[in-house]
Image 1 (cartoon, rainbow, N blue to C red):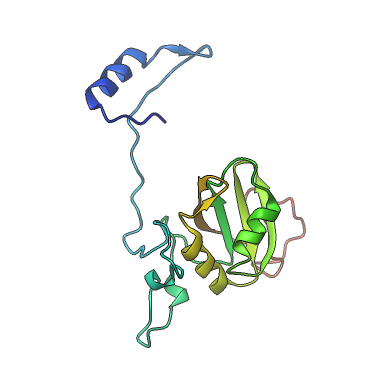
Image 2: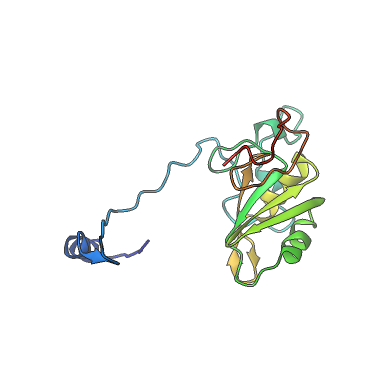
Length: 173
């Protein structure tokens, strides 16, 4: 992705470079479009205020956080597992565990290059950790945090009690 504030120069560059060979293959250049955000999203995209970001979470009629209504900015429902990206280079599993451990009991961290999955002990604590840490800095990078599925295609099977029992752990791609 290339960001520019000069729309006319971007148009000229797109016209000049589109179709040119890059690594022996024709280059296709299109303007980027942002995915529509969840209109019901109520927090977590901006850095949390001092004292945590729980003030932006949906509340029930008693003023308590309604964890069943919490969704991330992609519309994913709250789970006890978090997808974490944006941290600075050189960040270790232990640093991520310690950082999230301020808000939740971290069961495990799975690093996959430039992103990680953080498995917490319970959904409510994961919601608070996400709300509190989204946008915060870790090793020079701004954290982007969304909810992850209980099992995923990247080998992130966290919880053996989630979903139907499987005869093979390698059944998913």
